[in-house]
Length: 229
Image 1: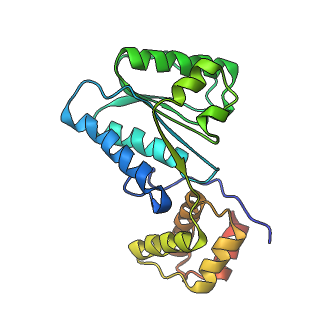
Image 2: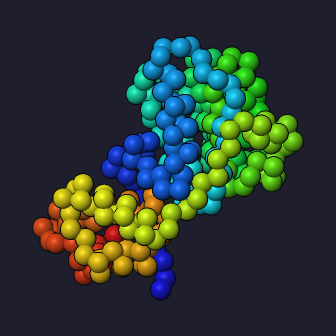
Image 3: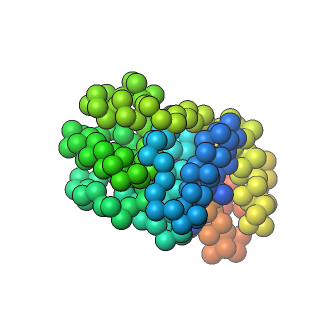
């Protein structure tokens, strides 16, 4: 069956609490401690970098955005760079951390920015959290940036298995007071993008459509929703 990838917005942004860790428990616990440092009121955090790597859909961007949101809730700002940013800002001493996403896709100019941010973060004792699709040693980027990404805390993120994805969907649906039949669950897992972020977005969309149309969540409802979108 053809899988359908959805590009729709989340009703709520990513959070550490909302991340279903599964086999990635160690990475989640590390980031919970990492963001907790800011609550002490300390002006800086450890400059030892943290690097997350794994396949698409393993949760890298979710975790980086969740850290950014956690810092923001604490009144702290952070620098953000991903491969889609063509004109990133200069490093700011006001940042509590530097967050580098999709480092495996950085252009030469973005690599220069990331290196500059990294060096400044170390100088000013700011944290660095980065993510990419490959182990740091295998990144096709400039040597000085690659070696810096690889010398700190490194976590490989694993994709969730189908039983875990089902458990997450069931838990999320129960939290909304929704009933997902086994047939609906099968349909969602076989006809749509199977990474967890897309499945959560799909659930958001289905929930909203069911409320709008005042219908129960069934396969015909999901098909009708896709035709309307």
